[in-house]
Amino acid sequence: MLRYLAGSCDKDVFISTTAPLNLHAYSDVDWANNKDDYISTTGYLLYLGSTPISWSSRKQRSDARSSTEAEYKALADTASELLWVLSLLTELGHTPKANPVIYCDNLGATHLCVNPVFHSRMKHIALAYHFVRENVQNGKFRVFFVSTDDQLADILTKPLLRPRFDYLLSKLHLSFRPYNLREDINNNN
Image 1 (tube, rainbow, N blue to C red):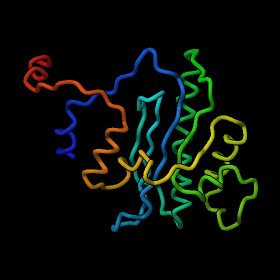
Image 2: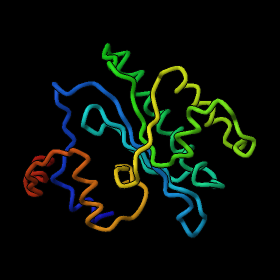
Image 3: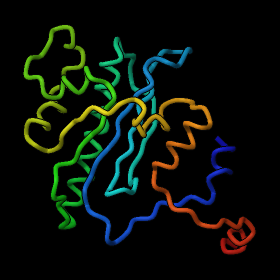
Image 4: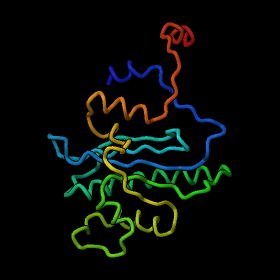
């Protein structure tokens, strides 16, 4: 963690005043990869235009019986954050012109979002299922499949080799600023 922070002191999030107000998100999970408790890690990135404005990486509250269940729980967390930001933008008078999109790399989870038939083997995720599906049906947002290679939220859910990490970091559209630790310390004193 400290190496990451030391290596990213020159990165900023910059929101342009001319950027489009379109929202989209990437939702991912590292299913049961923690060998201590097998609890999955959820991660999402929420973008306003091409700028990341909200992100999260945390363990899920309970174990998931399948990768689809874990991904669907992650979708529900992502959808909740997306709807909150959408509500905030609407209150500020900036309603996006297009419906937001959530990108997920699990076909089973993306199919559950639009499937009106609820399968009995998925009963244990009923609350998340109804929350996401009802919002998709009401046109609040859409859920699309994205290949694992294009899943930007991977950077938040699992350890990555340096080339993959650098590639995903470049896709976050962070701005670069020269960093001077001595100047930062002097300005804070």
